[in-house]
Each structure stands twice: as structure tokens, then as C-alpha cells.
Image (cartoon, rainbow, N blue to C red; front, side, top):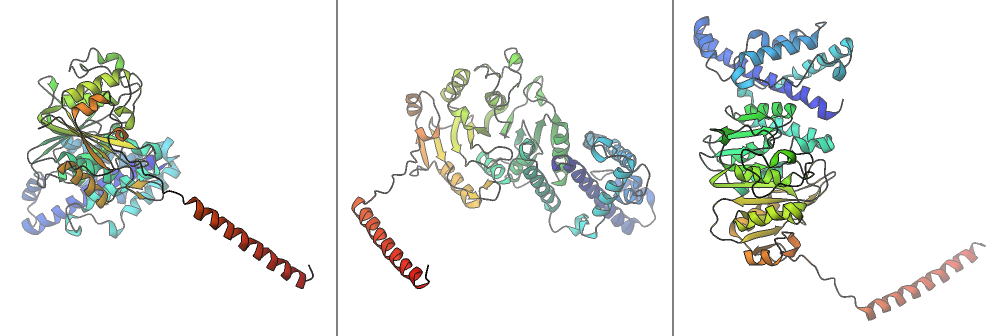
Length: 472
């Protein structure tokens, strides 16, 4: 089975194990406190963030490992967990079928696979009780570690549900979520970018909102939130451009911070309906049918409140493509919404080797300048992908926050400069990275060639003498 498929079974079982171990530890604590008083124990359990019946625990599942219909039993237990926690967990397990013949084979083979899966998770080293974990983020970080490796193995599909950790960290630090902020990602994938943004707040006074079109990935995002102890995130399932679901009084909900890594140049994004958009997101212009980049940009800007800031990862084409995109880009710049353009190295993202950029937008700016940063040449070359380390991220952030101009790295462009370039934002127009080639000393090079030719004659002469001595 491909890793993009078996990840759903592994990550779902990890989540069930977490719920079960959390419940088991609470039950042990309450029994120690209340003895055999079941009324008090059950009353206390009902106040916990999750409810779990004894017949929904991992221990109960493990006892069913020899069942003839093991896949069916697991499905029933997942359904019961959802039902008992309808408000929080509804739909979390809807996209994974432990009784699928297509995915797991015929009954005998399926039972064998599932039995091994349960036995693997019963390993004592996978004790996920809170008291056994060395920190609050251990289980959440483990989950993200797994997702990142699944994304790496999944190739192009990996980019659909996970943004590389370093890019998420950079994006989160650029927009600087603050205490009390509403944080939104319209293409949230498995939710890692939202979680990274929330960590900048450094307390629990924030609210996360996300939307994702892939139902399986929505489940990953919801589980990711709970495993990071974020229990009130609002993750919706649906097409953000065609059917935005975060609304207030039939208008788009407004957010303090918006972050996203939308699908690059999405075709068939819904251009045919854009002119009739009731949320008026495309008044600056309708993007081309085959490239939805500016559809996501305009949706995100429409979702910002009056002090909002946003960061979005995009292909470089958004910086210079013409026609309707040129018109939209011009208007965004004239409205003084664009704050920075940051060029990233190539081969950072799963499923594509093309270089990307980050655009930072702000609703409130104190000047009309735009900072250009060319960070494309500073990266670590790993086996399969390039990566950014803490030093690379720190340099980008310091340059952005201090609006520094560094030779061959960054430039603060005025509105007049951008207008002179016909609103083309291609980074080399503003950051000159040309390196003069070292001058060649022709005389010295000629002499070196002559010396090498003399040495070659001497070596050949010596070789012929050795051959004569050997009678060859």
C-alpha cells in the first residue's frame, strides 16, 4: 500500500491509542480518589474533553484481534467514539475504512494486517498516558513528525497535506500572531501551519480556523489539533473559493492573521462563477481559468480585518504574469497592501522542485515601500530536498523586521520604482545578485599550459624507457 494511503490507518490508530491512554490514566486517578464510588467517577469523567466507553478503548480493540470480522469491529468502535463525542469528533474517522477489501485485501489477509497493526500499537514503548510523556507537545510533535515523513514519501500528493516545517515556521513568524488573535488558513491541509502560527502567541488566548477541500486531510487536521491540545479549533470541509464556510452574518468572517500554502496555479478553480461571487472577492479582477493563485490571494485579503496581516506561499509566476493577473497585482500594490516579497530556494516543497516565494500583505502600513528579499541561494542541500535551518530563517526575519537593505540579498523598493517596472515584481529587477566572474590571467594561463605540455613530454619519455627495459 502506498504511504499516502496507509498513513490514514496508522495516524487514526495513533489517535485512538492517545484517547484510550488519556482515558485510562484519568480513570486510574479517579479510582484512587473516589474508590468504588462509580457515580462520582462517571460524573468526573463526563467533564473531561473526551468521553470514552470501556468498549471503545484500545485495550478492548486489542482483545478483538482474533475476531473473524476485525475490520468491521474497528469501524463500529470508531463510529461509537464519534457518536459519543459528536460536537468535537464528528467526521474525524469518516474517511478511513478498516473493513475495505479494496485497500486491505480479502477477509483473511485483512484480518492479518489489522492484527499486526494492533499488536504494533500495543508495544509498551507506545504508552501515551500524559504522565509518561516528557512534555505537553510530545504527542503532537510525534504526529507531525509522522505526517512529514508520509508527505516526503508521497511525492506530489505530499504537498497537498503538509507544508515543510521550516517554511511553516518562517511564515508564522513573519505574520506574528498576537494574544487574542483569530488565525485562519483557507487551505489548511493537516493543520500544521495553523499550529505553528498559534505557537507565536505563547499562551492559549487565540482561536484557529481552517478550511480544506479534501475530507481525509480534514480528519488529519482535526486529530492534529487535539493532539496539540487545541480543543476548540474550527476546521471546515469544503472548497474555500466555491463555498467559503467561515461566515458571520452571511459575510466572510474577518481575521487578524491569515496564512496559507494554497495549491500552486490550481486549474478549474471556479472562474466561471467568480463574476457572480456574493462575497465580492473578485472586484479587482477575475484570475485566469487555469491559474487560481490570485483567487486565493483575493479571498485571503477579503478575510482580513482592518488591522490584519497575511503571509502566503506562491509560485513566482504571480510576480510577473500579465493579463488579468497584472491588473489585480497593480491594484493590490496601489492600495498599499503588499509589504514584502521573499524568494525561497528551489526544491523545498513536496511534489514540486520549482522555487516559490512568500508574499506578505498588511492592511495597515506606515509607508508605501515594498521589501524584496532574495533568499533563494541560502539553504541546506539534503538528500531528496533542500531545507532551511534556523540561521536561514533568522536572517530572513531580521531583514524583514528591520527593513534592512543588504547587498545582493534585499532591497526596499519605492512605489515609484515598482511603477517604473510596470508593476512587475520579479525579484531580480530589485535585488541584483549578479556575481562578476573572476578575471582570467591569459599570460599566466598560457604559461601553465606550456609547463603542463613539457611535463607530459617528460612523462612519455620516461614511460618509453620503462617499456624498453621490459622488452615491450
